[in-house]
Length: 402
Image (tube, rainbow, N blue to C red; front, side, top):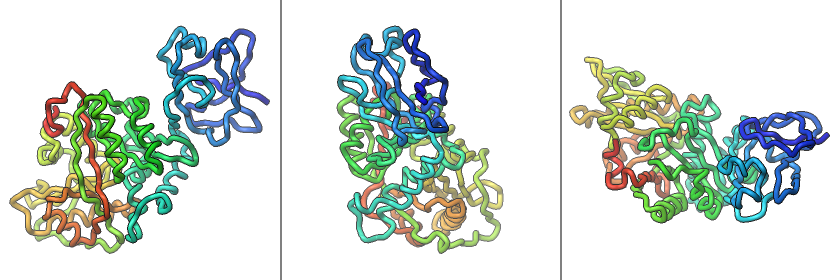
């Protein structure tokens, strides 16, 4: 039985007299049951082209823009040239953007999580620290784990092909990334096997929205170089923060330090979001307050409360499952309060199945000493945080955007 693939969001009507049976659209990540052959049908130079849809493409969406004049594409494009037409890459003539698959099938996302967890030692330059090869995938791995566990950040996962992918990119859903200045929410993470595929996908405006402020995080230099080169070519401002990546190799052994008398450990209350936002290096503005509130509300966190009830030390976790925004008020430093907080939060993340890892700027010696005292190991390489600012905020540093 032959079925024509029809997209309910962007229907492609066939010429008159050509029937089509309704099947679940692959754009929604559902494949049709039973022994059927799916055909992707579109029109090119007044010819009806058909291409069987491969089994490996079921449950994904392959975005492929027809780059030629509208007259060369589907008749719908003649009336609506901006409608994103969906067809297998290569079925149209002319130059095209790199293939991009949006993984919407839960079984594929769980399979991807397993692939990232196992790591890719054969394709990465790694040292003999056994967890290192795995943790170069850590940022994307943590994001995919959150997607598979309720998706509190409302992220989505893209690959260049499936199941043999060369790059994985996580990004916010378009409905979430509506604030042009909010590079906290507009958070991307990338992991690649092939640098050419990395450059092709990250430079693709369908994959990355270069018209708004955003941040990209990754543990591979090729991610930094691609973002740097593309931002320069587009005349955009780029700020690069080179962190040291830290991993706890044995989370069950993470010390659980007792708080000082009168102090107690607790989750962070949303009522303290303003205090945390003002203490953050990127804070002090409306979008940072919104982002910090989102982290407090939707992700694991911990704080140490003084006898008066206000937090004196805290640590959050982000949509990539990394420990972040660790801070102790100046008057309470030097008393190992941060150790109690990190111990509580690390145990919570480990119980949920997440790796326990973080990042620290090289000059932050006190934080490095604290993390190493708790058993964290500094991994080789650089943990890149890249903040891209479009032209509308180009004259301002990232930390002052409002």
